[in-house]
Amino acid sequence: MSHQEAIDSPVKSPGIKKYIAASLMGNALEWYDFFLYATAAAIVFGDLFFPADVDPLIGTLGAFAGFAVGFAARPLGGIIFGHIGDRISRKTALIVTLTTMGAATFLMGLLPTYSSVGILAPILLVALRVIQGIAAGGEWGGGVLIISENSSSERRGVFSAFSQGGVTLGFVLSSAAFYLVQLLPNEQFMAWGWRLPFLLSVLLFGVGMYIRFHLPEAEEFTQAKSEHKTRSIPVFEALRTHPKEILVAMGLRVAENGGSYLILSFSLVYGVHVGVDRGILLLGVTFSTLFAFISIIFFGHLSDKFGRRKVYGFGAIALGAMAFPFFALLDTNTTPLIILAYFIGNGVCHAAMIGSQPAFFHELFSPEVRYSGMALGHELAAVFAGGLAPFIATALLLKFDSSVPVSLYAIGMACITLIALLYSRKIVLHHDRQNKDQSAVIVQS
Figure (cartoon, rainbow, N blue to C red):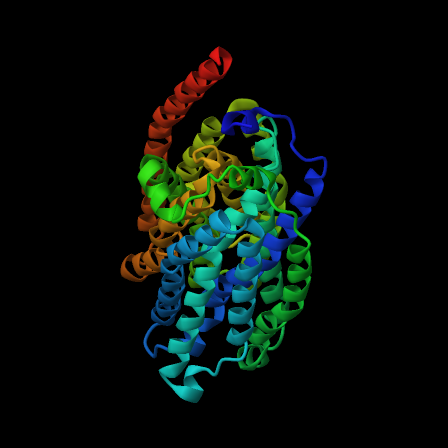
């Protein structure tokens, strides 16, 4: 079976639901671990690991610097696990990523704080964050591919969007965990309560390992491997054969990834800075992310009906349009308006991009280098998009004491993604011409 025949075939496995369930649950557990740091960095790590005597924003800035370092490690994880996924198996890569992530997260819950061991505390925290980043760098591509490579092109958008739903559930779990423990008296929360979400991750690790050990291998990858199409060093082959696709994937990620961390992480810092109760902000994040689970799948469905580019473009434009209103709604310190801000920003603007992204990225790369190509584009962009977004936004707030520069920053990210989206049309047209030429050769033969 040719690559194009595989793409255009009907649903290739009668058990597509088991792939969806495996990706959904595995991703939820893996990303619960990864997102714990994002929430803790905004709420507690600044005081405990990066103390500052003058302005609490400076301590938060240090915590977000550690957050960014974790993102810097993600491309390395993409290279390592992309190689394993393309050369050995998608399943093996996913089992190793979960093990690595679970160990790093559990150890974070045991770390001594700055008051106990001084500078060693932030050093150990950042080291574990780097390990988390490596694991996360290999997770996303594998979680997407176990669904997308077992779906038809007609329904790939809605099916593969479930993998992003797993990421969403991971964020919900981490936000909900911190919401519950911050209900403790502040002294207890700061002394030991914050550790509980990290330590409880060991229970989720067992569930995740059971799911992934029983995970079927992706059929499209098995077909490519049986035809000896896998490359000795897939990352080099992806760079050689798909450089434009990797750059486009990176550009598409800027507004999606950077915007999401402004909405879900930096907004907690900004809200507390302007006097909003921390619990209300966490509720806004949690409820809007639950809503986003549904809207992500809906936008994946729309991408099957109207095309990936149209749905993705809507999300990028909506993010730019929402940049100023989002912070204005937080400034009101009114609970319904704050919840509305999160629902629109997270459940509509970001969901439109993230829901259509898995199928969009899948269709940019051929199966023998798909894991590596998707991981490179996805994770290289994460370094300067999501990884730097909370740090840059916090620095802007510290400098100007205003949300206006942050809103302009969000609009700039949306513009970069729209440029990448316009250029992606040339790549899609080029691929269509190649596929028609391949079909003509098949017919003539």
